[in-house]
Length: 61
Image (cartoon, rainbow, N blue to C red; front, side, top):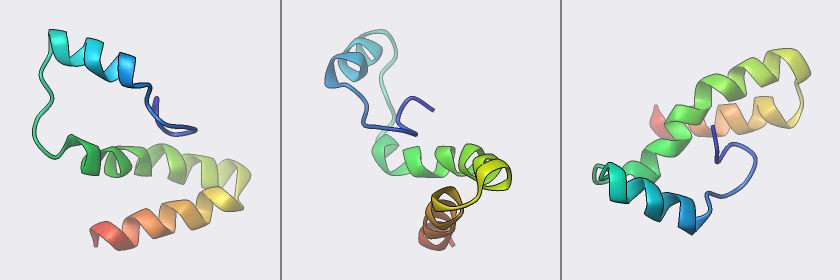
């Protein structure tokens, strides 16, 4: 969710990694984790959320 409307600050990711190492390939999965909130936003607000959710869904299909 933190990256849904912008990029993740490097300082935040570094601090997280100190406490809990991230699994390989986590960067690619961020979009997959964003799919559900984007679908909810597309129902509520339509527009760009719908096209962004569709683009992500096609990449993981």
